[in-house]
Amino acid sequence: MWQERLGQLVTTCHWIGAKGWAPATGGNMSVRQDAQWCWLSESGRDKGSLTGEDFLQVDIATNQAPSGRKPSAETGLHTLVYRLFPEANVVLHVHTVNATVLSRIEKSATLNISGYEMQKTLTGQQSHLDTVPIAIFDNDQDIDALAKRIEQYAQDNPLNYGFLLRGHGLTCWGKDVNEARRQLEGLEFLFECEMQRRLYQRD
Image (cartoon, rainbow, N blue to C red):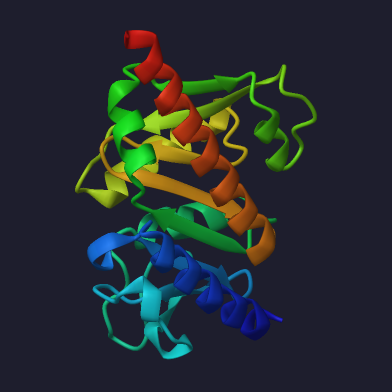
């Protein structure tokens, strides 16, 4: 099952690369193998040309790769998602312009999105009248410390679709590749709409 998901993830990585959502080898993607292991893209690899050989097996509890090769710098964020959400089987971390800039424009700890029909592309959303909260965390080069802050937040607040890192990008997930890809594309569309709305409001 996970081997099939990995193949689908490689295809999705090529799609992400073609869209320019993981420029200059940035971004990282992973798929869960089971309760103990996940497969995570190797650091420094162009996401538009990844193959299955570019993914490393990583221990979800320890963030260690038995192969000795270097997994992504954000390994701890992927494993955190797998620990927090047993239903999550795919994690996508991208560096889109909209997610990166919007996370800096919005000064509060949450980006609240409401009024867009495309909110219904997100799992569980039924109406454009709902408010979709996307948490924003200050970026940190200490990924362990960042993961702890996110974990503490998640104890009292919902993290339903993904989260933003300020000035960094978006991390989102799904029960399978199709759901993760749909949530990524839906969130990116909503971020672009919100960026445009705020630009027009300034005029």
